Length: 522
Image 1 (cartoon, rainbow, N blue to C red):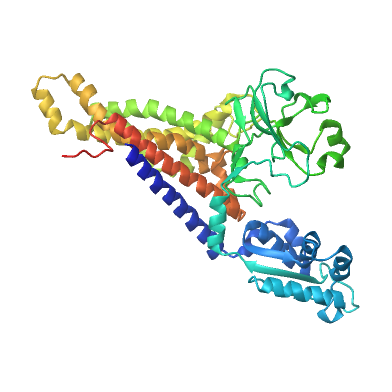
Image 2: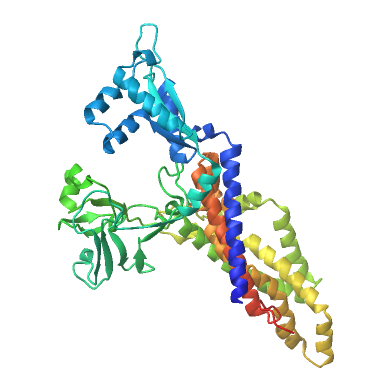
């Protein structure tokens, strides 16, 4: 069993890598990178040389290119001690054309060009874009930079090596006192009450481990999953964070800040991260915090995208099995009778009618009965869940009815059933002990997939009922050419698919004694 699982896990990991690589090849090789600016308002407002700089700056953030501005190169030279500040200031001003450069600028431009051309960069100089009177056009200031395309193999390696970010006491580059970790049984945020916590200094997160009254009660910031950074759907945020952060209105609560200040706030102080110089940059921060761990998330009253999708999906799945299994059994037992024909008509209807059509039909019927037809995260009523759940459950019910009926009828005609009858077993004993058990085995394999699929969400259902779940995330990213989100969601889907397949195999082996993952010597 262990050998089989290890083999399946290794094959699963290989499949996940293959899926992500294929998606990245399609995105970064087949799509024109200029498309990522389709809905970028800033890009559309820039012009001339400034647009070129903005485009390459963003492409660097998106992973398309490596990009270095001449001014950044000079700053690095000062930091490394290669030149002093006076030299940098003298060489920083480049002329409108190369002929207008000062001797100091000309020398540093030569070094800049030689250094980056040796690394495979293309050094580009954009002369000043001026009008007939010699004045700069909008965005027409002269520019000098080096750029090179990033190999796809490098992007793939960097993506997988960056999937898991481990916090470290060496995260903060500035000199700070008492760099290290502190374990306490009494979290300062709980005013000395018993609450174990690990607090860092020099780490990205102040609280690496802490406890509170929210499920799962023990929380950690030591390891962070990084699926990919969004640059249009949720600008600057990681895909995993986008899917797991709470939504809705702020939840205000009495908060005691590290300085002792008490006020009603939605700040989650356990999420505090480091930002150099932030405490002294604002009087608000200075009154609340004693160090530069000032960047905090806020508490909100709603669920996350995964939360809404999972709640709707798991209830729909449970409802489908509670309805579909008994109805499928009844259809098999009453084959060719009225119940079977009625169930078959329902199955044909669900299979024949496009999903979008019957979802809108359920929405219209629900609306006429006074049910909420638009999901509102601020609504206290649980009725907002009813129509999305029904729309998801009814097709699953039809699918379970269809396959369970077929499997059971196949089993009823098997030789072992005839043999059981000849041995004097009652129809009830044959049904419970043989037919139902064997017919349910194929359905059991799909249970883990059905459960984990709830995390993915339902694209059409969530869009129709405006559910803020994960189902709409991929389509939104595709429409906005948000490549980071597309890759991240593809990675998430692949992981769930592999996991559900392995769990399905294990569950089948537990139900069916004929299935074994071990080989025996004969």
